[in-house]
Length: 483
Image (cartoon, rainbow, N blue to C red):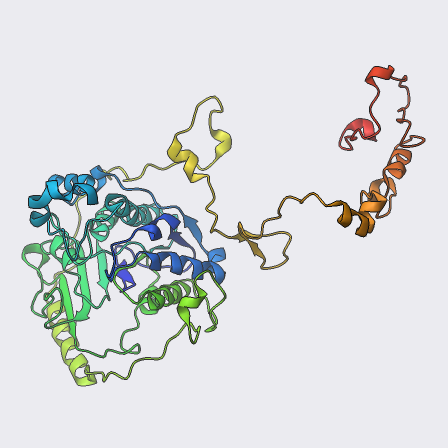
C-alpha cells in the first residue's frame, strides 16, 4: 500500500504492519535549492530528519542512505528523451535547451537548479529502494519523505515534480504483488500517478484533494478509469476547510496490517511539514511522543509555541457531513461495479531494481579494492546520532559531543592541577593500585625497585646499557609477560 501525504504521501504499493520500519534518509537531499521565492524547499526533509532523531524515534527504525536511481531505472516509466534532457540541463547551459525546456514543461514552476538530476536520483532512489525492502519482506513499513512527487508525467515535469518516484516504486512492487492500492491525501490531485495506471486493474488510485479552480484542475468524481482500469480510479473531491477528524489516514490504513510505503509530497510551510511528517512517523511506529518539541538544530523555526501540534485555523469547514456522506455513497456505487479481484498469470519474477548486497564486511575479499560508492556507504554523516555507552540509558551522541582529544595543558594549569603534580596513572585493581598511583608505584608493583632502575622480570638478564629502556618507557600491560 502506498500513501502520499502533503508533506505526506500514501502509497498502497504496500500495506502496513507495525513490527519494523525502515526510513530512507540522506542529509544531501536537503541541500538542493529550487531558487529564491520558490515554495518547494527540500530543506524541510533535513528538518524532519533532525526532529525524528531528537525525539529518539530513530531507535525504533532502521535508517538507510537512499540509493541513487540511474537513468535506466527512471526510463522504466519516463521517456528516454525526457530523462536524457534532465541529465543534461544545467543553469549555465539553459540557453542551449530552450526548445526542450518548453517541450518538457521545465521553467517557472519546475525550474532548472544546480544538482537537479542528482536531486531526482535521491528522491526516486529512496522510493524504489523502499519498495525493494518491502518486496523482500525486510520491513513492514517503509518511509521516504523525500519522495511522493506525484505530478510528474511520462515526458513532462509538472507541479514542482520532475521524476515520478511513486510510479516507479509501484512498478517495483508489482513484481511481487498482484495488486497495489495508492492513497493520496495531498491537497492537490495525484494526477501523475492516476494517469500512469488509468487503464490497469492491478493498481487502484485513491485521491482525496481540493477540487475546483485549483491546480492541477483534475480529479473529478466522474473520473473512474478506462478499459481494464475502469472503476480503479477513485477521486474524492473536497471543499475548503477539511478538518483533522475527517482526514485521519495513517492510523486507519495501518490497522489493516499490510505492508505500507509512506512518502512525502507537497507542503510549503516547512515548519509544519516537519511537524506533520514527524508525527506521522510516530503513528506508524505506534509511539506516543510529547507535544513539547525537543531541542534540535532548527528549534527556532518552530517558534513561538515550540509545540508538535498546531492550532487549526478559523477557516469554516465547508465539507458538511451531508456532503461527505453523499460523495461516499457515490463512490461506493462505483466500487460495487468492480469485478472480483483480478488474477495475475504466473511468471518469472523480474530482477530487483537494486541488487541485494551483503552487509557483512568480513565476507569481503581484503585484496579487492571496493568502489567509491561502497566506501561512501560506510561513512557516517556528522549529523547522525547513535546510542552512547558513556551517557547512560537513552544517551546519544553526535559529532558535537564525541570525546575530544585532550589539549596540552599550560604550565600554570599544571601547577593548579593536583593530578598533574602527582603524575597519577589512575587505579589498577588487578595490581592492587589505588587511584592517583604514581609511576614509581607502578614500577614497584611490577617487581621493580624504583622508577630510575628498570625492573627485571624473573629469569631475565640485565639488558646492555644501549638497549635498556629509558625511564619514561611505556609498559605493555596487555602482554603475557606482565603477569
